[in-house]
Image (cartoon, rainbow, N blue to C red; front, side, top):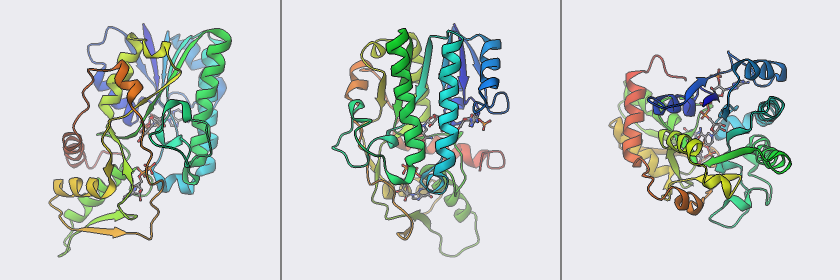
Length: 313
Ligand code: NAP
Ligand code: GDP
């Protein structure tokens, strides 16, 4: 099969590139320089020329809590345009297989826990990322509408917070793990006498962190093994363990020889928790082994240190 991947230069796309080595399929990885997905004419031309059997749609305007707070409008518009254009082009070109990526951060803010796939549209998302969330929710709806009307196989995976080597390490715009890694690197290489792990917020929020190569493996399995797709449009991918931001901070701090934590509670905590139910995932991926958190963090920190001048930041 010929599989076209959008967002091939990003965190998930680069992990997928690593994991498809030796695959029997032909993989094409695109990015915004090859095709700006916000422009329908470009998408139609690019997909039409490449003629894929399957589209893996990873591309999005993505960012951490603080980017979302500042740029809710752009997050909404860019993601609405990209998602709409990708599915519309697939439909027009009769590409009947498409796997998209949502996120557990788009679920309702006021909810019962654990959140499961059926609760996605049951109330407003957290204010901090409402633009990104509503745009992503429409992807779930758009897939369902096409599947119902035309019998397509348009599906979505819903991962929890991702982290890994090819992340965006921007301190202002990135997610918590790459942000902390970058801050710890700068602190540990400074001449200061007292060095700190500077943690924004109270350190109390909880997250289920998923190593990005694990998600890449699930994407590949989902293409060849479609059992979960017979049961649902969208499936959560989540390790069970919830980790506090404080605990994440000390794990990362250790990699840089930093023991002292300084909290900055004047900064937002965002959503306190988004505990996701992984029972559907476990039912279909009963043998799946998640990368242990400490191992994933060690690999990510080593990659960052070795490639400091080249990483996205
Ligand atoms: P990322 O590292 O920021 O990469 C984004 C990708 O999208 C890049 O390849 C980028 O291409 C591409 N892109 C952005 N704007 C584009 C445009 N206008 N036209 C074409 N391509 C465009 O993001 P990621 O973390 O890999 O995220 C992948 C997917 O996972 C997204 O759907 C995201 O919502 C979802 N997700 C991420 C997380 C997380 O913690 N990171 C958690 C849950 C779900 P360029 O390099 O050319 O800009
Ligand atoms: P979220 O999981 O969607 O809220 O996004 P983030 O990955 O940005 O995680 C945000 C959580 O980590 C919030 O509780 C922040 O207060 C906390 N946090 C602590 N230090 C940092 C940091 O350096 N960057 C970011 N983005 N968040 C941080």
